[in-house]
Image (tube, rainbow, N blue to C red):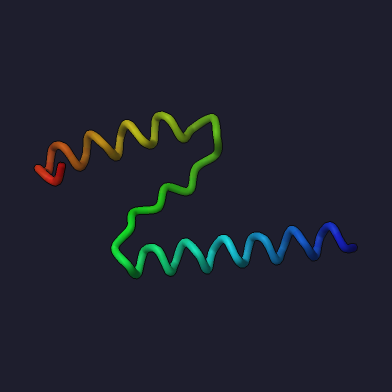
Length: 53
């Protein structure tokens, strides 16, 4: 029971942090470790194509 409660609290805090960062204009990539590198490259290329770098 404790583990499930702790996991739920962690997920809620993580979501609150993501929302707060996005309100500040920060882009948040919420990806699994195995998909994060590709997501980072894709986002970098998107920013580059829009002239935002």
